[in-house]
Image (spheres, rainbow, N blue to C red):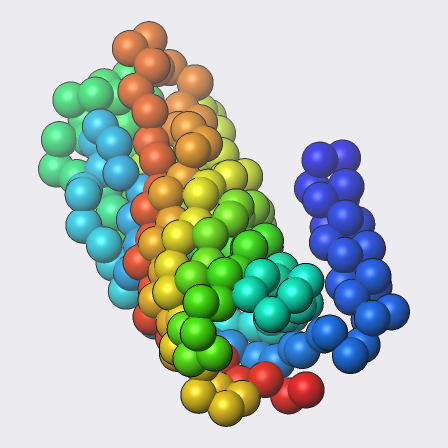
Length: 202
């Protein structure tokens, strides 16, 4: 229900933008993603991945605007060697080292453009991980990771004509640890750093 309402809300925002076409720009973007899910039993590394999709820019005035995006994300989480220390009763002795993640990501950003060439972005991001290939814990214990994540976003963008060069940092607020036998309440949080390029079609 929550996922459906969020996606319906995003579509409503996009439809509202379309009704004010003169203020609306849209395009395609792709970026190199360095991300990780960090916490007890996981590594603190940032692992390369990919992100790409569509962006929309709606000008509120000359300085401020909204920028929602709809992105496909491929990322990886990595198990640390001390994983069995924290999750002794759930640990899968034949577990793979990495978890491969495919996700749908929806950032909703507020943009401030002090000069035409520079835009500062900040806002929130929702991620739904619809495919997680991992076997960190025994099959009878279910999935090690939760599928939904909400985080804060901050970044900067360089505007050159219809091309956008950007860098961005995301810190996840959600606890992604889904292991049922977790008496010490160990928490896993996501982080992302991305560098990319976008091209406005309109």
